[in-house]
Image (cartoon, rainbow, N blue to C red; front, top):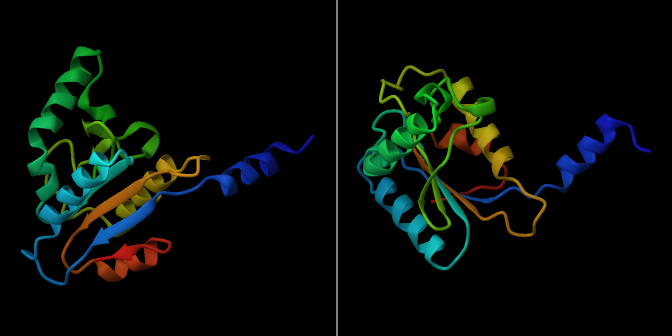
Length: 172
């Protein structure tokens, strides 16, 4: 029998991480948010799993776009007897198991907001964001052949950080 650490390491190496598509630009207003949301819906429409994540601490644009869905998730959590403290976005300190929380937008399409609390996220340390991104990638990894796609709407000017953080991303 394999030692427990070795066995868990072998399982971790067999996990397949999602295909990552990251929309980046050195300036704001270039259309990253709309393109990320649109591509997410297109991929989900052809029955491929996709998660769209708001990685823009300056504008929280995708979070605002999906605000009605975000509010439904909060209300649902309260009805289940939980609070929003158990929900965590890319820049929140909460989250179940220190992994960002995903909400379902449509069949096959999930979303990770920048924040569930709508507090200012601009002062969040880069290290915290990098840790949340790693946790998100790990939570999406599966032993299946097709873990789906992860689409990131990046903050203007964060292209060098994301290039270091992600393994083989497709940067657009």
